[in-house]
Image (cartoon, rainbow, N blue to C red; front, side, top):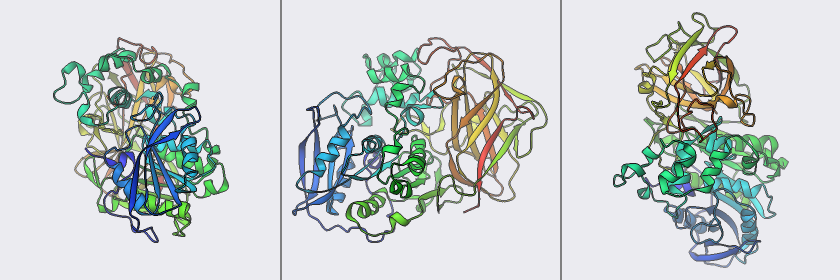
Length: 588
């Protein structure tokens, strides 16, 4: 599938109605293979798209590991240049034509040096912005945190702000599909086309991605794929907790260094939703200038890793299709050209409410006036499967004290409706959960049929009281909307590796069969449960291959070559009241 929006942000669907945007007015030229010197003597190469007439012009810098001529990028760069910008598209260090050694996300001073180089060129007026999504968005945060003097604004779309918290780990669980699929199968090579992946029909079974992901021990899965060690993959596995290795890559600890306005942009089903949310809230609370805090913006649609009208099994209607390119042009016209188009005065939060397929704007996130309301799990002791007796309500639990299930890593719950990206062979987005919920190792708690709409928008968290008979395991929670016909669509998900219950920087194994409270972050969503629908919570211990299988042995990540079956217990009593906290808001 071609996804130009993943790498830079080409035009996507129906255009957002804009006032005072720059029309196409320029004939352009392209300067290829332009050397950009770094302070250590390494030369990174870029293509420069610019108007033919003499400048100077404002500059939009995009930095990519995927190749400056990546399909889809060319179109967007032309459109920027036609509207009076110089668009600089650069291969990051060690990728394609650029010199140096490549190590994913290890940017050093390259972003800073590129911005300052661009500001000093004869075609530049000294005002530089940055654009791009996914990896191309993350490098914007890295550059902005170094405070280059000529950087005016950034627009990180679909981007991570912490490679530990919202990219390669979630709740301490290893995001296997991304780490192997992107980090081992795809990125060690200078190719980006999916037809080169090992999942193609011509690949032998031993090299197919969907077989490599079962490799144990995980620490050597790179050898199973490519016959060579992949240094960054091994580093990721080695550093299973949030330590100094990951802090060096974290932008969430550096928001105070970012002094320019930032516009984040993402999807409710995106792999990097946490980065989109944290980028906005981090700048809103801790940005390095009053203007950066005041003028931070966020837009989130019903998308995955890029905007589409239909995602998963749901068509969200034509209103879902906001054009990222048009949004960027409006943003850059204001901040780089000084056009008073009002975008700086727009309410900062623009989000799409699923369920009613409607956009709404607010003054902050979480939405002011949100009522964070607990919904409690209960059952008669048999919440296993959607045919069980699990219930969800606002009243404290009554009935049996607990539910039990077996988690067997040899037969993990499949990833259905994953928050993922980059072409992994896995179902993503809103998907009917009834197949998963028919398994005996999934506990299902369903609320009563609603007589009136219930709207939620904001962070969703779970307080799960549970025990396991081993030293470590995982707990995974999904928030689900069940319609009148029983179709159960996932809205949000969260996972916690039990050893990280006190924080991802505080690793402590469990005492077997002892009850603990496990805080599980489902990130957030915006949705209206319509009358006749029901709210559901599903609890289990695996989501494979989106996340690695916890072997239940208590060994370090990647070390175990064996697995054991875990016996799990979920409690719901007055003293150990397992509950999800939903952010209730007015129906938009």
